[in-house]
Length: 495
Image 1 (cartoon, rainbow, N blue to C red):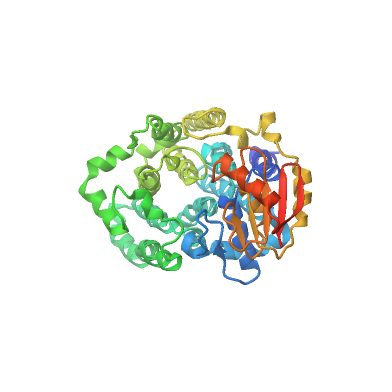
Image 2 (tube, one colour; image 1 turned 45 degrees about the vertical axis):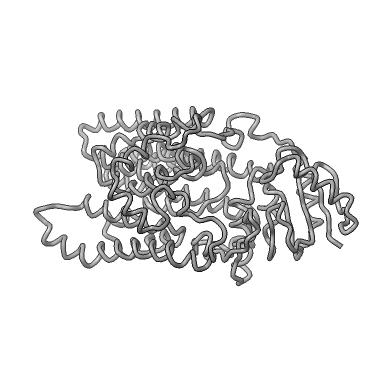
């Protein structure tokens, strides 16, 4: 059996199986042990329910109690296409789709690498490196996010561009753009990067015609889509309620136009924001440096040799590092997922220019090793604030332990009628979201069932003292009937 046949039949399936098991151990375990939350898995599960019943979804889990048109809070039409799967997989639906998306993205990396390195093990090494990138582990440790699905389609976008399959390219373009509002901005920069990559001065007269007919219209469409959706459509649908995404950039201006003007007129300040904390809190320094270091050791050095990929990452860097909220700056949560495909794709093109093949193998293996090593190190400990590795550290027994009697709790949740309007603790929301209305406690409004985890540490977004006072009031309030009060779970029904 030759090496190519052996690779296809054994090595590649082993890599995919290995990482699929790890991803399931992270994501499914968190959900099973009640470590997923109202924001964002509960919110997306609620949207799944509405769309699967051919209804418009209203985001009712907002901490302020606002009820906002789903598209006014997250412009992610992709959820409508995924809704039918909820009949098969219930509250795990989006977690399954997220893992499947990552595996599909990994296969896209393999296919792209195979174009450059046929009949070698280089595609396998780069695929392993891709699956090892910290951004994937951080995203899987915290719920579901539609930008993960978008990011995992990017390898296929580049693969179909490289193979001049325009129909498939446009199909992937469409899927990415409907994943989330800011993905349109990213798409525009990705296509600009692809145009620069393909540019050949000697062939420009021929390329120019193709650019005007194909790439330029898509770039314009991407930017127009982004501006119209963010500046017009979402504000109109939300009526000023809920989260104002632009408020994160308030130091630059209050609108898309003002932010762009600030970036052009004060480049020195923008450059400073890419590296330094702007908060005088004494605790947020080093978060941005950690991000830059992780990019570097995960193959990011190649960005200096293939700057068109740096252009593709420009909007990702800016949306992360120009905010006034340190949660976005570092390597936590889903806020680094877009780096994963670009870093591996850039590494492939960097290696493609190297000779001899032994050098290529050496560099590829080195970057695979550094990526995996530093991903594990930052799973254990990182600079980014409020990081608890319990949700991520799949190789430690504490990941598989919980303070809750989760089996008893999940059985007791069946006491809540499917048609009830519920106000609940954040960690219960993803399981109770399949109904018309659900609120994030302490918002109760017209809820006729209150379902709470009463043990310490579950009071968010109010203080522990205030939370316990409210629990005590429910127990003595004659307008409520206690349906269940065991195992740190309280279920009360309004008479």
